[in-house]
Length: 114
Image 1: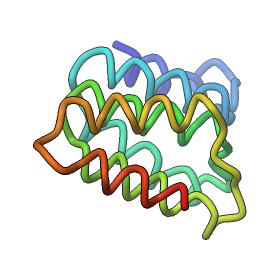
Image 2: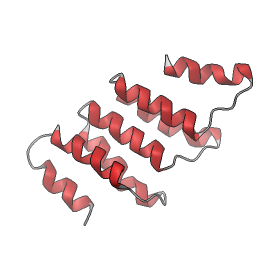
Image 3: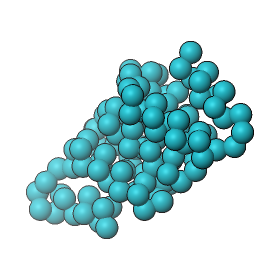
């Protein structure tokens, strides 16, 4: 439903912005649709939108909710490369992803912060 609403925004002369995409990504995570969440994240630059910390937090959380800890950690590692600083919410989402992952993931998550 969130994706439908996002796609209908231009029809009513509303331009989706970073907040719209972040909300849709978050909704995808709640619906266990991590692939759609990551697809939305990757589409943002095509619409001249730059994902921010909130957008990345939503994507990391979507991956976490679906047990995709590797993808969550990849997004965490990517943030500084796109000049974004992970915050407490980012790390909490990544830690939650690791909690749902296999053994030894905690060590990997801690190495990301070093």
